[in-house]
Image (cartoon, rainbow, N blue to C red; front, side):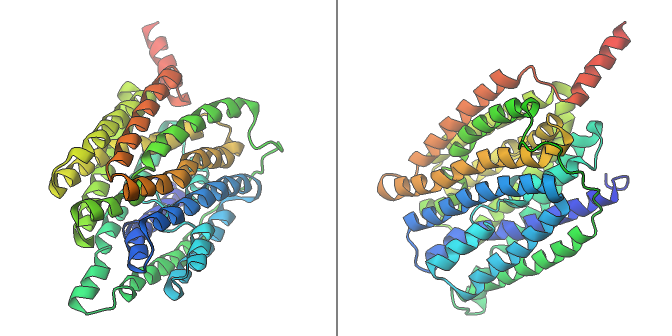
Length: 415
């Protein structure tokens, strides 16, 4: 699967896996760590909201700058910022420093690894660079392989999230200090990323237009972005606080959550390998919609799970379906915009996907604290189902270049 890939694609695959590994355990432990150092449920939601708002804004900025000054340079800069950001967790628990950290690079509070993502602001820049390294007919497969690598390494990272609990129980570590080895490991991984990005070759061609996006790309990106706001307003009602929701609802600790996230990411990884195969048979849009709608339905019935085992099983199966559209959506976006605008397009769509996460965690945390743990889940699932039906209605006739070429070849054969 990897032997014939371009050298730079392999380096990007490795960097995605390394980031997914580090950001995965950070996502699992971060909200619980904030709880351990004394922050309330509402304040934890506010911290996540600040992280997502700032991350969304800067993702669009990084995507735009990558089109102007080079994607490789921006990726290196983001790795440096990750080192600085995570170092704050080692030395301070003060609210202002934590807010500064999540604003710089939202590791833990928004640097998602689930679904093969490698983390927040990196993704738009990385997508644009990866699209330059693959042909149209290989794009879905390579993007899916990228997500597969991220999800497999993310699942291993989820297992590592049990380290603080191990250090507390077996080594009698202080409950707060037991989290610091994970922060230090993230810093080491970020140093490694700098060397990987340095080795990537890029012949940067700056965008010729001063507009963020041309009129041709703008209409497509606008529709995609508006739908992304609805989808991620729903996803954000529970996603950023998922481990915390399980912690409050079922009283489970990090070890059990680590296993659940490991299995979730592992099944998501398998779905990434199946995604381009299914898309080649029924089309990219149908594959994205059908898999995501089924996942939204499982999300809807999650609050009615009577035990942790049943709820965890639903989430694991949901992961197989929910993340299948991730690499296809990234590939679809890169296919429908101009080459020199890919960083900006990825940044804008990422902005639209992440902004709702700035609202949802605070709203969700308030509802959890004052009303019910389950209401945010029901609201989130309903919003995601609305997105699924609307997406199909708007894009059911839209085909990326490789599907159009396949259709033209099929017509020529019939003639």
